[in-house]
Length: 199
Image 1 (cartoon, rainbow, N blue to C red):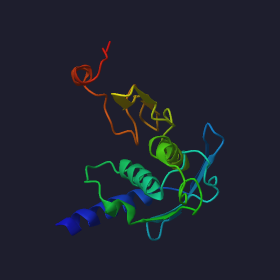
Image 2: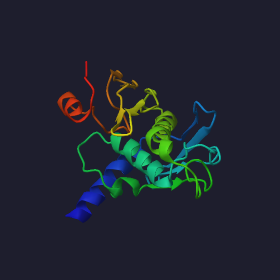
Image 3: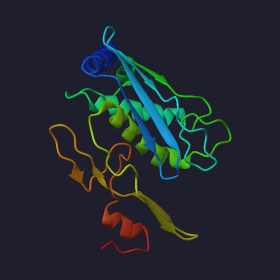
């Protein structure tokens, strides 16, 4: 049955790819680094190449994203194109040939710093993919991170921003989108564990 679940996911994504067309997008980040992605669709096999050639080289700061984070963003984007309810699994990636240049900010080499790659660059990769697909406008393109603390307590949260519109649907205000996958800590829990008051 697990084989069926994976095969069903693969077929679901192939059916979506069959209706796509080639596209590309150049996403410039606030730092000036660029995420470049090109989508080349093979309608005969109902597969696609997702090529990040042209993406900026590994960055001196911490905005580099490990290729596993990039693959998670690719998986997420193509899963969202499937309208019916299927379990998220690696079958979704089977129709895709994802190419990430080694030494780029999306496949950095040791000892590159990567902390912002997970929380910020992953959002930019998602935005670039949606741009290349031409299916959805960009949301905030960030996770809007906030952190505070002292030598005894530290707190970290991603704040909701909003989602872009697409053909036949409006955007949404003040919701977590794409790679954020988190919700605000319950105020009661936050106030119980930290010396803060939530208003």
